Image (cartoon, rainbow, N blue to C red):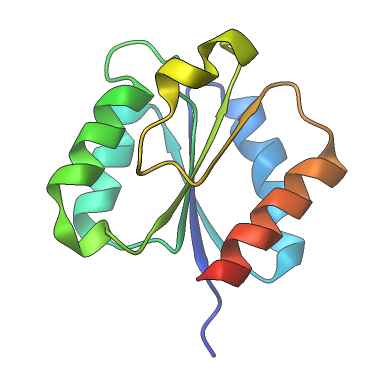
Length: 123
């Protein structure tokens, strides 16, 4: 069985590296996109099993990435985890049918790994 592919999208390089370090031990291949535009380009070229997406990014936002995901039927089976610093009050407005789970930053490493593992198990 091939290793699942996880695409992590955030505008902060340090967070990308931190999240990648937490995902790799789960037996995943990890790709990083620093910002929404890079994420869209990568999603046009590959089909991750899981997309971990920040919403609040300058320029092309996570909302823009979600709109793009909806337009590409090939990505329908991809799981989407939103991980954002916008806070719990934003959850109802960010709940999109494409989002499988939502959490705010900061998140504990244990909780993060549990959420990722659960989403990958659903695939």
